[in-house]
Length: 327
Image (cartoon, rainbow, N blue to C red; front, side, top):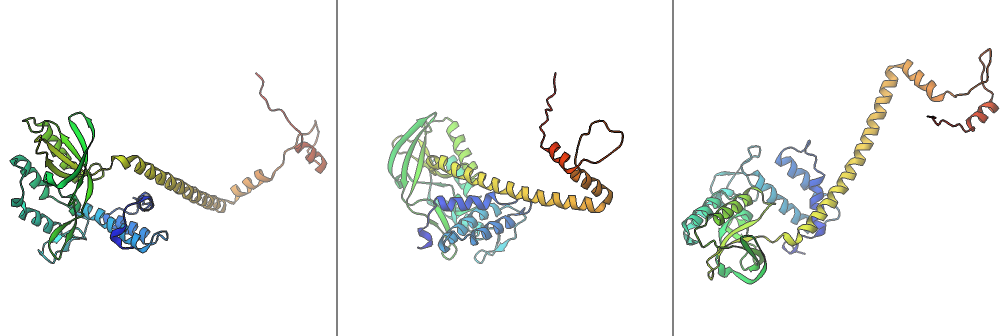
């Protein structure tokens, strides 16, 4: 099975979640340490095939490459093409930005404010998967109405070319993923001078660059029949409940595991402390020993001390007593 044939499934997501949930943030503090820990977990997971490992390792590099950019704790690499220093491992983010800037003249939304907003986002691109772009409406097929609410109407569609997915360093171009399903969010009355729709567009673009897990926005398009603008989003809502259920299950399993390890660790430390205390204080040890091995017995009135016989002690230990406190 070729690596490109592998797609996300429940098994891969469980392994992915496990690598994150088992990470000790007190030990693995830097991005490099976190990435190294999770890579080792994937490499040593016997349930994965070699191609599944390659797939997850590639996805992990994509994730941490986005986080490395702008992080001063990450070592920089020199690009063989532009000779500048970059922070991502799989690509040079500066080459990607230059590529996008060189293509500014090849597209327009017809709105100067929209063009400027998209261009500013592209100048700050951190990965191939995070490119915000203007997408011509004729790129979409099988557009179907899904639902409505508030100031928007939601559709599903197929994007023929798909989003950018990879930087080809040899050809110095961005490559697309190909046909993929997307969500089109029509911003009702966005053909008017109402500023609210533009604010939503700006927020969507900003969130995508800041919190990729919160929202994934590919860019903007425009319906030629209504002249309304439409956000192009990744469809994740249908699978969100299942994803959260899987994540919570993995979380609870990891919590149980950590608690069990904590109990064992506590018991070992407790035993060590008891031994330490006993060895450091012989008198205290003797006292504890006597308390633990002494036996109790009640005698009738006697004018002198004496020990109970074995028969008396046995009878006493098997006798039932009522310790109820009366009012």
